[in-house]
Amino acid sequence: MAPHDPDAEGAPVSDAEATGSLAEQLAAESLQSLTPELVRRLPQALEAMVAIGGDVDLRTVLDRIVRTAAALTDARHAAIGVLGVEESAALDDYVTHGDAATIRSRIRGRPDAHFLSVPIRVRDEPFGHLYLSDKADGSPFTDADLQLVRVVATEAGIAIGHVRLLESARQRARWIDGSAALTTAVLQGTGDALSVVAEQARRLADAAAGLVLTPSDEGGLEVVAVAGDDPDALLGVRIPPHSPLVAALLLGQPVFVADCATDPRMMTPAAARYGPSMMLPLGNEGRILGTLAVPRKPGAPLFTATERTLAQRFASQAALALLLTEAQQDRERLAVYEDRDRIARDLHDLVIQRLFATGMLLESARKRAGRPPDDEAAREVRERISQAVDELDTTIQEIRTAIYALQQAPAPHPESLRTRVLREVGAAALAAGFQPSATFTGMVDVLVGEQAGRNLVAAAREALSNAVRHAGGSRIELTVDATVTLPDGRPGVRLTVADDGVGLPPDGRRSGLVNLRRRAEQLGGTFGTTPGLGGAGTTLVWEVPR
Image (tube, rainbow, N blue to C red):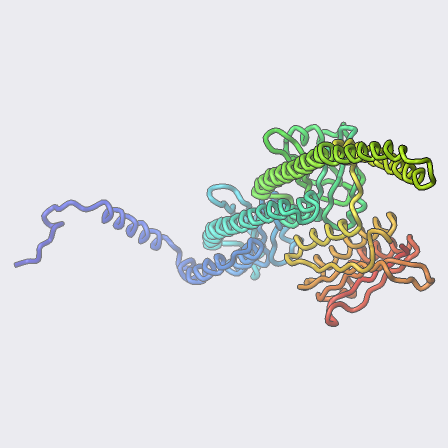
């Protein structure tokens, strides 16, 4: 008996079988349409496709694409021109292979047989163009070259899409972790809350600085917290109220600036030192606390759409954390007021009443002391009793004055030098990822004057910033010694910041060290460096008269 053949009997064919057959037929027809030259170069093209998708860094992927396309077509020069550079962080206008000037001139000129251009799309959206020019043997590009480059462009779009997804996921995770760390640090009181917000935003946005601005008395915005190089030059900088930026930000609208140095809305000399910037309102439920600004260096990439979205969420989270901190401080102040009221009531109801009763007893004793004969001993007793009654009256008046003072709001008092230095140490810990140590010798809050203390805090901020951002170590030790004697015999205060990092590079930036030296010399002091902890790293020694 012949084997059973369903098709011979007209059995129905399933959809899957029909689809598979159609796909096989189309694939066979496609292979049959390939030219012999393209078939010969197909293995090389397949290897190139594998190489293109083998990395997770966008710059590396684009470099690999242009090299692969040049190798497949034997082109001397290749480039990818990126559309909408603001959506592709860390990219220039072109990623090139070969001579950049030549390929740029070819792109600007009229295409001919020695030039190829193929679009690159990522998820059906334009990303850019892949350009090739000048085959090594001088011949024109062929149809096979064009087909291979189209295949490369298709694979490039897939690879770029994957890299974008991975980068977006990494960015989101970093900003989410940063927001959580910010909330924890602010609520735990690790340093000044606004300085913590500025430092975290600068780090997450890969910016040159982080600035927090609050509304000024004139109606504009004033910088009140800075994270970055030379913060003293930025503190107190104001954006005037007639700037269009102020109106938008106080209404809760974010502002994105392509170049601070050339944007007429900035209206501050400090803007000339920065390039792209995000200015984000710090607000929650209609209340605007201020503005968070994160400018990048001149010529740096513009912020991507993903970065803008994540930064706005961070600013909202920061505003919420600041509001929670404010509420916590209000509760603490309320508790202090309630405690002061209780003390005042106790003083009035208990202490004053007892003192008054004691005074009445003494008054009665004085009257009785006048009955015996008028001798010397009796007069002495009366005098002492009268003196005690007067002292009680004075004490009662002083207690009543104290009660009145307790019922008033506490007057603001300046923070101690120790507190201000510890705040800078806390901000450095947040940026470094570990806690620097802080040691104080002598009564720094009593011995160090206001001018020396103010400059010492600024010097500590600069020295800690240098250690955190440039040393790359795992230990930082800060010491403030108010018991030193300067070489000329004057009493002084010495700030020492030591780390175990890589030390000072011979050709590195020295602006921070110049600032430290200038600040010390203006006060009649000195500044110098020595080897750091364990012989590694750097120790900065800054000392001035107290």
